[in-house]
Image (cartoon, rainbow, N blue to C red):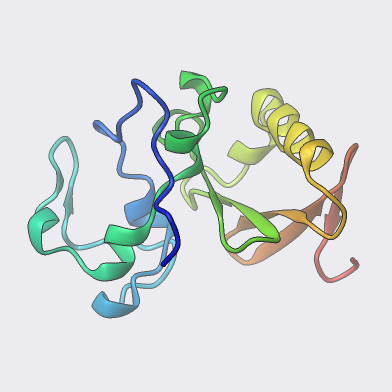
Length: 145
């Protein structure tokens, strides 16, 4: 059984519910980029104690990375960062803020992530309907890379 990663000191979801919109939740038949019917703004998940397994297992990258400041918290930057497997880190942009990943602080963080990864690992940006691979100094549309 894989070890559960520990959250960075002082970080909590708090009022952030960005993952409740950006991610798909198969158990609820909720598609990505649609707000979960169980999230209430200002309150959070209304079924938290009974939330599905995929929600229980999800840990956002902001919670894990002590070097990500408050400006990169998903409710502030509108991008949810997470590791989808051992090889890939995904940055999913809130559909209501499609250009959020293009803000200077997010772009700088994406490039820093790319530079810190080993060979064969990728940082991927997903916006509703579009995907890019992040390089050390640019972005390549997935259909071209």
